[in-house]
Amino acid sequence: MGTEPTPPPRPAGEGSDQDGLLGFVASTLAFAILLGVAVIGASLWVVVALQAGKPPSEVPDTSGPAFTVLVGGTFLGALTAAVATWTLLARIGSAYRRGSFAMVSAFATMAAMLAAIPAHTRFGPAGLVGLVGACAIGCVLLGRRLSRWNRRHG
Picture 1 (cartoon, helix red, strand yellow):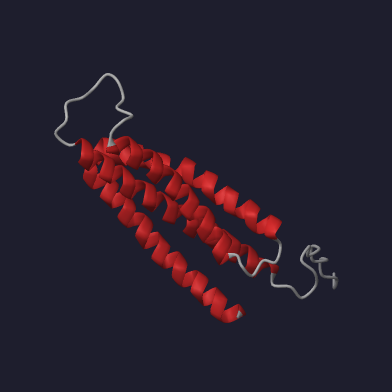
Picture 2 (cartoon, helix red, strand yellow):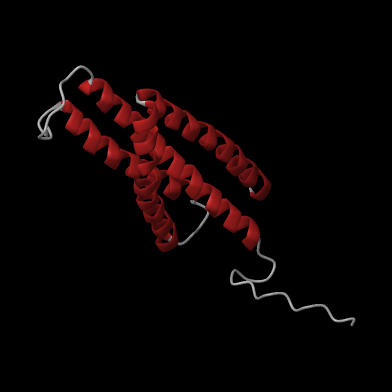
């Protein structure tokens, strides 16, 4: 009756702030993904603005500025997520781990950008603006959390 359960082993070592670090990493990934989706959403809004007033086409136009903005904005969003993750996880000494998390955030951004489809289909360009705004609010909230964590763990 008087025995307490044995705590699980801590891979980061005794006395480490593993739980806090896991929360920091998760918040960093969420921040980076939202930032990347915001960049992609903004580029999609630019594409919609560039195509406004043009008649629908059966064949995609790959020679105009809309295509360049679409492809460039998509890759820029993924790159933004990866760089944000790499930068914010600077306290993790392992380049392998930082790079892995950066790649995860870049690929997750590509999956999360699919939220732009229903946003644009249902609400038009205003839906894309709303998506970018929601991502910006999420970035601000997560940025505050990350900032508090950094102050606490200096």
